[in-house]
Length: 297
Length: 297
Image 1 (cartoon, chains in turn purple, orange):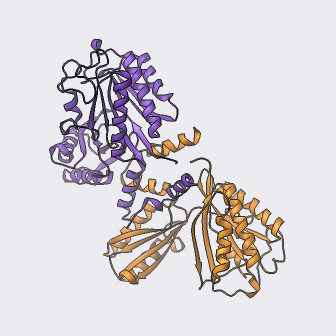
Image 2: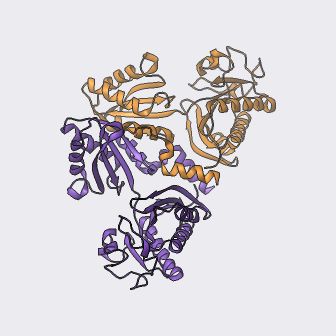
Image 3: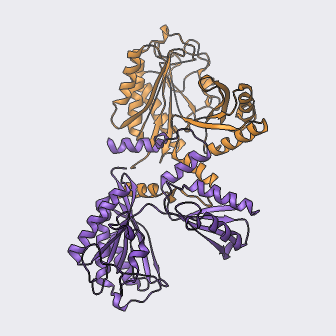
């Protein structure tokens, strides 16, 4: 495939009015060269999430169209939702996929923020890998106080937020894998115990968020996870750890599921690990070899 | 990636004269749109193998250039090698990679054979998935008697073979994975026992050829395998079976290696199996999703 690829997963503060949601989604999807991967609206959170990918230039343009349309349609002074928010286009993260580093995406985020402020007069915060202050790496810190009572001045523009559209939090982060492991038990307490043992926040595995849930439809307990850096803490390491913890509690694994998409590299890592392949290299995969060549040809 | 892809792995009866080998290789590699993946000459067998890939049309043209050049440069009446052979361009298998079935490749093989006979007056046999007679599926049967005393009449042309270039055996086969598993022992007898238990020819796993070897450089015993249909007998099934057989003999696995290339699908199968992913689908891999879209766009 020719050229670098990135993904963008903006969150908008509209989850109830379908016409507005579709207008924002269509503003993004009709940008040339962009592939819409997923779009969801959540009435409880009064929020929507739109996932798309393409070349950095195409994604940049599509994201800008989304932010512009959202700022025209959403008025935060009349907004009430359960989810914390500071902007109409609340959070815009750029995610490297192929041929781009996290740093490249952070640089793109900075250019994107400048355009949002210069052309739309919406103040901008930078977070995660694009943060300009160490205490703004965490999204929660930036958003504290929300639209009504922001706790810190924007990185670009401000100090007053835009009267209706608020601010826009722009950043770069790694690809997030949503991964669930189903246990061969209906006992949700076992899933909760395992989740607690493996999640980063209680001293478990780095870059792992985990919850124990009960799946009513299948009467199974599930360890539901987000892996926020699969290169550091791979899918297969999480799987093996959950299997060990479950075995220690006398339970086996019924199966697992990937929610949404996962990068090829995570699949390659898992295969190389379990097959114990020495010196595995992506270039040993025929399609990868051909792809490199097709791009160069 | 746009359009279907195939691979071709012709065997030529020249493994000693580097100038001839390079002339054949270059005739193939300079065909437009073809990627040379590997080329090897073997003086003992007096034989060379050239692996390349591309669109069906590009591979067809490149393979024809290779056969034509080989038939101009190689004279079998003066040839002496350990390996059985019936032609200058001895065997030409077409292998589906992406967007082509084995049947598509067999049809391509039939068109290719017709061109070889019509334009070069070299008689043609068809083998494996392109065989026109059930007893010609196996290459050994077709090649029995060799250039000097062929045991059956060609499928196209003949009955006399070409006076210097002999015949050309054209076919279609599945992708072959060369996979070795190293044992944590230097005892080659253990590798031989395992090889015997798992190979198809002694009633083991279908589509598996296996030998036990001793790796001098590392003082390790190795089970060296060819998997001739990885969709029917996947890499992960072979790995697990070898692990079980080794464990039964009190030995563990030191590691494994892929020789040459393997198809993405084999990697996906292995990851989905070991991670116990329910309803795994190639479309869940971000790059695959994007690729489909890039081709369509």
